[in-house]
Amino acid sequence: MKRIVIIGGGIAGLGAAYEIAKAGRSGEDVEFVLVEKHDRLGGKIFTDRAADPDGDEYVADGGSDSFLTEKPAVHRAAAELGIADRLCGTLDENKRTFIVKDGRLVELPDGVMMFAPTKLVPLATTSLYSWPGKFRMACDLVIPRKERWAPGESGKDHDETLESFVTRRMGRECLDRLAEPLVGGVNGSDPATMSLAATYPNLLEMEQKHGSLIRGFVAQRKRIEAMRAKAPAGSPRRTFFSSFRDGLQTITDALADAAGRERIVTGVAAVRVGRAPEGWRTELADGSVIDSDGLIVATEAWAAAVLAEGVDARAAELLSSIPCSSSATVVLAYDESDCPFDKRWHGILTPAVERRHLTGISLMSSKWPDRAPNGRVLLRGFLGGPRDEGVLDATDDELIALAREELADLLGVRRAARPRYARLFRWPGGMPQYTLGHLERVDEIERLEAQIAGVAFAGNAYRGVGVPNALESGQRAAHKVLADLGVVSGGTTAEETR
Image 1: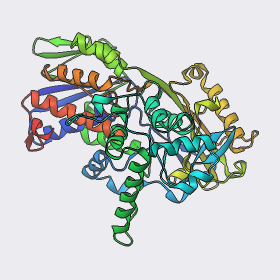
Image 2: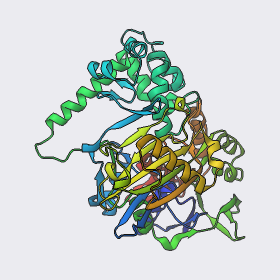
Image 3: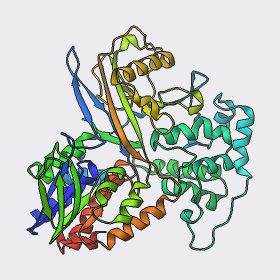
Image 4: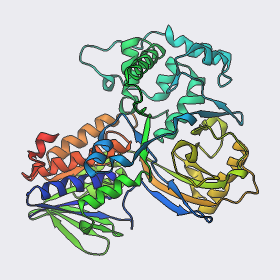
């Protein structure tokens, strides 16, 4: 019996476990053992189902709450696991976003895609930007490309930071008022160090193809509108983000159940790995040892760096060079009567220039169906990240109080109101930073990994921070190790599934 040890019980590790379990059920002589240091599975996916004092319950996602609909990995897994009927989209009738400017909320103008305007009138009439800022953004239409790529080149050959790119094309005000809070909320990144080729290569490609971001996004908007016009009458509209009716943890729970929880060990950390006479040896914090033929490390980059010291010194060095930021999410529920504001919106972004601790706010009870009982309002606030990690030194109670104060200041939540539900979720070192040179680092990690039989790395530190990316990373890691061990998966060799 071939045994593969998986370290890390987030969606990457669970995705790998499920692939190995499928190979075992198909008749292959292979099994896995998954080790997770925490008492629960799911990693950065954590849905808290909490009872309301008056009955019913809250569905509170403390980490990731959604995934990009256009990325198919989660949809494929949901269909295979028999939970596709539990998928849901956002409530797009409430789809509005606000930006904090000078302490007040300004609605994001219609037609803005990422941070580029695609409609003239909303740009001209918004108070989000000054007139000089609007004129500077419009200059994108005439500013030439930075350079033309040679045949065969890609954005990787012409990488630059997001800050450099946005200020070059759209101006500083566009960066400060929209691009910075957007990437801070989505990627948890600092635009001054963030690699565009590793995060948004489509922007570099758009500049090459159209010579202008505005022209590129206008073309993209027209394509989307044409696709919607061709959709059959009465067909459900796909929203930009998707989740599950019972919260995003639905997918990690289903993966764990299908893989086999009897093969999963929680509440104990892997502290060291190294070579064994016939494979690999994993030492656990409780003093126990697991010998295996294969090894998958599906942890945060900083944790993987420590474990990789027993695998390959250069890989460990490269992993340790990937910076990671810490953050926290605070989820609060109030009586609707204590929230005297218009609730037809999904989110608020807070630029760093506003000097507030809440980097963003989501109105979960208006963004998703059935997240809170009737008469309740469920809000999520985000703290920390590269621009304000120091705030996380405060206690949980202090951070909840800070969030309550800023919600009162920005939204008008009554200061004397007591939350019906309040919980803080901390994510230390949970968000990898894709800085300049990230793709080259990952290329070398993968080159080294390919030379080490039976070993693979997985997670959000490599080729994408989103939930589908992490899931696919775990699946690829499983296929690589299975192929190294000569195991057939799902009727084809693991190598053929890459």
